[in-house]
Amino acid sequence: MKIYHNPRCSKSREGLAILEASKVNFETIHYIETPISKEELIHIIQLLNISPIDLVRKNEAIWKENFKGKTLSDSEIIMAMIQNPKLIERPIVINNGKAVIGRPPELIKTIL
Image 1 (spheres, helix red, strand yellow):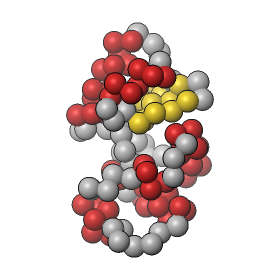
Image 2 (cartoon, helix red, strand yellow; image 1 turned 90 degrees about the vertical axis):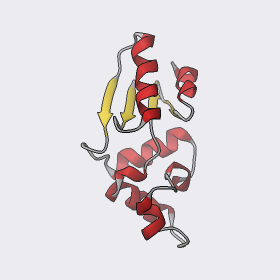
Image 3 (cartoon, one colour; image 1 turned 135 degrees about the vertical axis):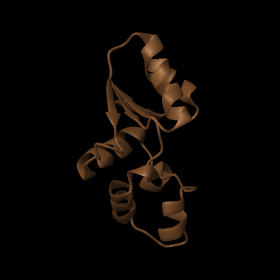
Image 4 (tube, helix red, strand yellow; image 1 turned 90 degrees about the horizontal axis):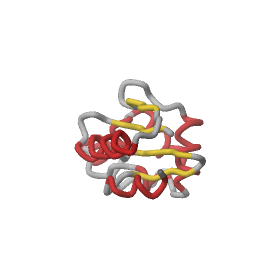
């Protein structure tokens, strides 16, 4: 089990607390400090069964200033998230081939 975590995000901290309380073994990936590869991000998007745009935090200043209103391909959206990891929704939890965005954090319990 993995959690893609940003300690500065309250929802991500709540998601981490849910995993800690569940007493399961998991790996914490601080994706801001340890960037996600393109292949890994594509895999996460496939596990979530969403379009890349659905993983973007559209209220981030980086998005509003550089990408909002532009027509971008899925590949361009993925590259934007790789180059600006703050744009990736969080937390993301992966367990046994299933993934969920922990918004709200209680959704994490659905894949424990």
